[in-house]
Structures are given as structure tokens and as C-alpha cells.
Image (cartoon, rainbow, N blue to C red):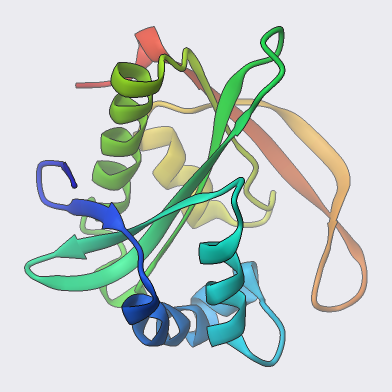
Length: 168
């Protein structure tokens, strides 16, 4: 269990699948995360992915989202990348930033990571703002990075954060 100022991060389990799938099904989250017709199966696939570590984000005793990370294993390029989604009902409360900082601090202290990356859609201004508040800086636009639900390619913004820039 990882404790932030207002959130607790704990390893997500199969018991979390229904609530995480319900959050992923909200229009605000589904627009960016998608996941096909069976969102419960999409969440289960993330939990089963050996390269991902998925934490449920809890606040006041209830699951309000998930945050996940994976590591680049090549020692010459080693870093951690993360992704997060939150229940739209808690957007704007600072819980996302708290979860991001809590996970980043854990990855520095326990795994020795020195650098973190995120790659939100360039049009996802809410995510970009949340990552910036957590200390991430824009690196550049990755053009035609991800195919959207509309079948067209969309840009993403590469952002990074160095361990010594991590806000307290």
C-alpha cells in the first residue's frame, strides 16, 4: 500500500474489475481510454499484463480510479512510464496529482527510477494540466501517435519528469 496525502494506492485485484470498468465506461474516461465492447475484459487484461503494475486509487474508502506503470528494461534507457484514469466525479480535487506524485516517489525510493514519462493525447487538456501540476514538463508532440475511436491518427504530447524535480 502506498499512501499519499489524500489517496491510498494498492495493487488492483479482480475484485476491483467492476468498479474500474464502470469508471472506464464514463464518457469522459472512455473517450481517452477506449477499451472495446467489454471494458471488464480490458481491465482484466491490464491486471494480467506482466509488464504493467496496476494500482487501485482509493479515497475515503472507495475506489476512484487506477494508476499503472511499466518500466523500460534496457539499462541505457531505463525509465518508468505511467497512466492514470479517475472517476469524473473527483476531477479537479487534486486526487490525480496526489496519486501521480505518490507513485513517482515510490518508483524513485523503491525501484531507483530517475525519470518518468507520460503520453496523453495532445487534445486531452485536462490530463496535460494534471500532469503539469504534478511536475511533468512537455517534451514535444508525437505526431499521428495513436489511432482514435474515429479511425484517424491523433497527436500525443510526450511529457517527462526527473526524480530531482518531483514536487514534495
